[in-house]
Image 1 (cartoon, rainbow, N blue to C red):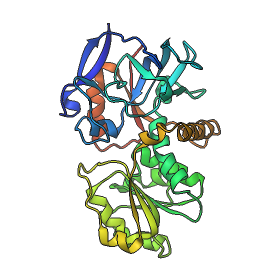
Image 2: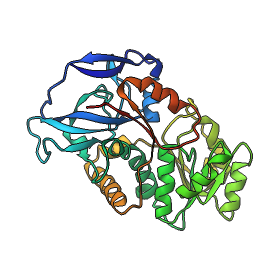
Image 3: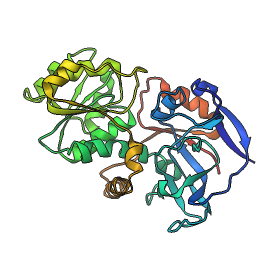
Image 4: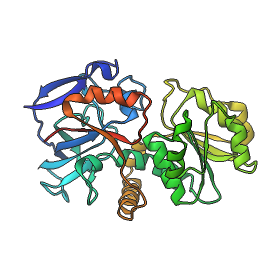
Length: 332
């Protein structure tokens, strides 16, 4: 028997249950991974409360969209996958086939070889954060030295990845944090300016550090409590890439500010880009190349054993002094 963590209703991580399960065979077009490690993501938290970009088809349901493991079975019609080699899952609309288990069967289109030189835990930690940031920052916003980009929640893994990537392209990266102690970490990560909205007026500060122009894009997972703070500083034709609800509330848009700036509100999900084969390949190529050249690096805060999955969520939801991914190791 194998093990799986499941929820049986939308009550959050407190309702997670570890139970025995049968090992499923890979169907046509699928592969089976013996999971070595899987990472926690804020999207999983939203999904467990039914406020994510998809809902479960039925219960019980597994959580988890980011894992690394060994291919131990290949389904009919699958080619170019090596049995016994380590692969990673790519984030996609997985519905009930989450990775919080010892084994997972997955559509072969949504796995990719583990980056060379990385451990299983490290391999499980890179795809969600770097690919989530890659598409808005590089493909859509076209980061460059002429662009001013705001990243709210800069210490989150995706926010921090956006700072890393924006810096690679020379953009003026502005970020927010609740705590002054995070300033050095954010500057080291690529921020040109760090703002604590509770202490400084965000829109006024943005105007000051952009010579009055404002921001060309916002990469924002916060929700209701943040957009109106920076909307007076939207540059002409700015875009708000909204990808989460850390506030727990979908935002009421500041329509007047958006009218005046001719701004666009873009609800953004990485899954839509992973499901496009051409865009998926561009994203994975960028991550492989950047890791190999040392331009992007893994950052794991803490690992937990399989049995302590709920404890890992307790740790993730509290304010932390350290930063990086939280990962579960199955021990397989």
